[in-house]
Amino acid sequence: MIPARFAPRRATLALAVAALVVGAVFVAPGAQAGKAGKGAPMVQRPGVLSVGALLSQLGLPRTAGAFVDQRTGATVVTVTDQAAALAVRAAGLTPRLVRFSTAQLSTVTAMLGTATPIVGTAWAVDPAANAVVVSADSTVSSANLAKLVSLTKRFGAAARVERVAGTFSLRIRGGDAIYGGQFRCSAGFNVKSANGTHYILTAGHCGKVASTWYTDASHSNKIGPTAGWSFPGNDYAIVRVTGSVSTPGTVGSQDITSSGTPTVGQTVFRRGSTTGVHSGKVTALNATVRYPEGTVTGLIKTTVCAEGGDSGGSLYSGTRAYGLTSGGSGNCSTGGTTFFQPVVEALGVYGVSVY
Picture 1 (cartoon, rainbow, N blue to C red):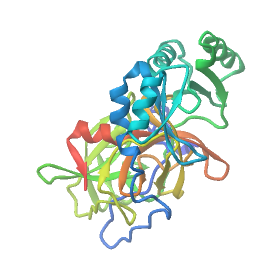
Picture 2: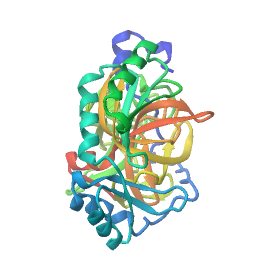
Picture 3: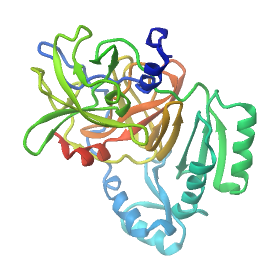
Picture 4: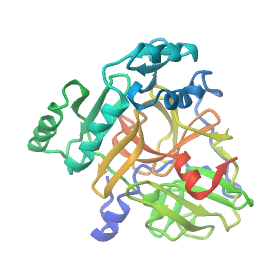
């Protein structure tokens, strides 16, 4: 998916990171913002807001996460004992007794982090399945796939391996979004600091490859410089707005007023300059992906599609910001998997907030 014109190799490896570029949320003078996807919930379910605190209260040995039941719409909290189940019911949520706790499943993910240096793999805890799901893309050889299967067998039902179509990649391509050098990425969310300075959040692999950003390919309308970036490991960057561009606190016409962490099973929306607005489900939190350009951890895994040119853009639901597009596999014709950098981490690191 990386255009041949992006050789030489050194630049390509650094830039290939700029996967899946999402629609800019800033609006250049005279530009018209697009509309957010219809059906985006404007408020969270009452239980969803208390899930994080409840999981923290239960502790790692007594739960394995939470998810939204796709049949009933109820928020389900997994538990390992009856006392924890009573606490979940008292909070107005639905408990489900499971075999493995977060602490036990974390042992599996930790092992995978040190024992599987195989590019094209990803893994995360699926709370609905109460197991660690290891995904292998089409670049993983049959021999390496067999190694993964053998590696996870020791954990029995706590882990399984799946083959996914396409490749886990970070892609960049030409188009209109935000431009740095010969490359394009997308703005994720407009944010500001306590002193009122305006910034734009985008993907870290984008911030890594360009020092100054513009609204156009001819570099005639300046946005500002890259003020910080983190990739690999993380995948976020921040651009300081110094040019004469308007930066409303929206994704298209959808106002963004808060940030948070989604729940597994929740419907979310992604806005991209290549493919527009698409929706899907969150399938896992704290996912790890081994891209050719480096490993990124702590990602949000989803069924939302994305394509080359959608990178750095916004993951949201209603007025709440969730993430920045990192990379994935597949496309918006046949579907795929897309991973997102949690926006709350970037907001905390840079001391900024959505508005």
